[in-house]
Length: 178
Ligand code: SF4
Image (cartoon, rainbow, N blue to C red):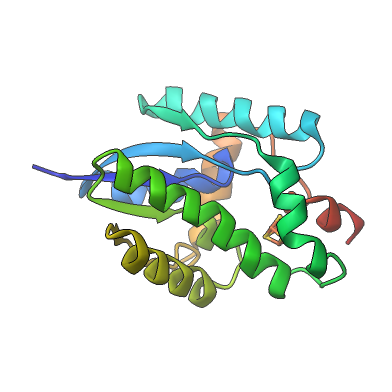
């Protein structure tokens, strides 16, 4: 029997290639938890695309809360950081912690995230965060660097085939400014 995996989805484009690499080894459920996304209209667009991807693969998509004010409070001290610095580390932690808690409370064997498929995201930081949360909540974390072996290119090709919406900024209000 395959292990039950809760896969945090940062956006629909980023789930395509990671899912292709995981689907034979895990029983995957998608988890959309991204309170970083700004503004509301953009959040709705990305969520709607995630639903589209879930439907295409016949997967369950669990929608976490859009608690954006909490995210803004927790990252406020880092608002002037460039993309890739401390604010992003806090942002990864917020999103992965919610995923780890949901996985632990709902009988998943393992949790993972699609975040590392992006060439702009540091996989080492993502994996260290996942491992720390794994110990904290007692649920296994799947370490990955999905951008390897042209992972980002592959996910973008799949996205074009599906004609999915592709955003031009990471997600938060500060990344629009950049
Ligand atoms: S740039 Fe992206 S990863 Fe960094 S804080 Fe903003 S939304 Fe999060």
